[in-house]
View: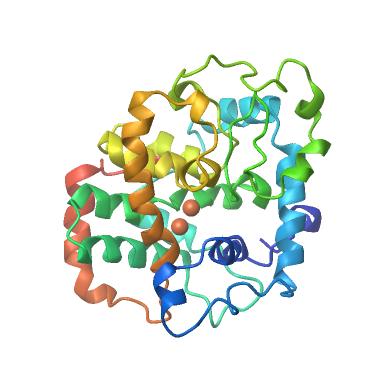
Length: 291
Ligand SMILES: [Fe+2]
Ligand SMILES: [Fe+2]
């Protein structure tokens, strides 16, 4: 990431966005026990400024036109073909500029998520969903700016909800006062279903598109909408959803705590886990994936 333009990299690492999510949506169990809310609600933290700048860029530049162009380019999947295991190695090239010693690598977050899901006895496809959910962050390694890889996602092509974090920054987005995109429904019809809605571009949509033939529908919703906090945490955009989305919402909600609250400074014992995961990957995925 050090080679990328600084304007596009306000975050010292992609984890800063996830740390901020924890501040917005603290773990109810942690609050109830030792740490208390203070630690999570420390708004004085200088990281908040970089996160704010990150959202300013994200909200300014994620237009309907921008997303269409990214989809046309990245959904050709003509960049790299890799085994899942090579893809994890590739993803791990994303290193944290701020403090490489204290943060776990990307693979460890994926493994901690999948292990937490497995511990609770969920079906194996959900374990695999946990393992794969952030693989789309390889977009950064293809030279994409942070604001087009991570951050809360939201529909483009219609009015932005004020339930999205830092809604004031949408005023800088050219779609904000484009009459085609600025009405409540914009280019969509009421109740059209999220599958007909174009979401802001990032790692969720990208990994969904890579995995869409290989996981059950519930898992695909977890991948595709895991950063759509305005929907799954704030209840916004109900007017775009249909009955199918409403049914799937509970799965997206079920997935979210595993993503947010499974972080642990102890890395899982990969040697012990490897046979299970090799089997799991083999049973659902082809020998290589196209990126
Ligand atoms: Fe993610
Ligand atoms: Fe994640």
